[in-house]
Image (cartoon, rainbow, N blue to C red; front, side, top):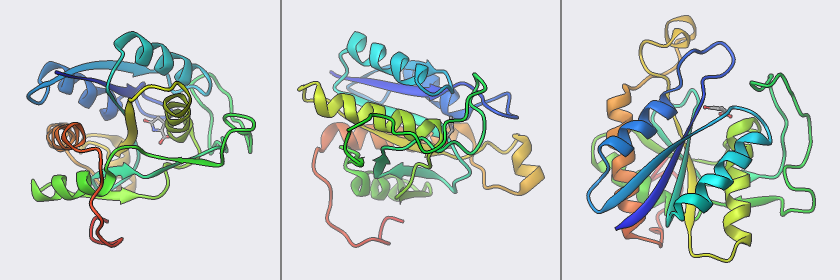
Length: 215
Ligand code: PCA
């Protein structure tokens, strides 16, 4: 059995719902075969989110860690790179807005996901669900958690792999009618994420296909 930790976020700013947490719960309830999934909810707060994540990684001793967050993307948006900067476009859930602050002072400028991002995107596309490889997770709490995760995995000396995926709004969310942002049902998102987890658990190397094939 591969132990998998999946995290989702609390709702933030105007929203009262966050599909990233809904999908994480559905994955725990109905995990892909051979995977033991634990779902943990993270506060949308700089600093605290990494503390909760870190405790969950150590407690579950997961082989694979997948953090999820909401963003106006077309589909399952698999992040390739986390950058060492908080440059918040708005307030977090504790009312803080760091600007141009390093996440880890003296840490490297960036970390790559250790999931096979192109292979996962291709597998989700094969299942008929829109997926892409993304080159930025932004500079709000999602990138913060992604960088915190990759820094932990890079420095703790274990074999764990991990990464971050942004998921779209669901059709009922206000931003969809107000701003026409793309949407996907949480069931479809969850189905796509099952493909990601199965693929990432089975393969630790990526496929070498040109940019654009999976974006
Ligand atoms: N999305 C935000 C933070 C929490 C979430 O679900 C982001 O993209 O940074």
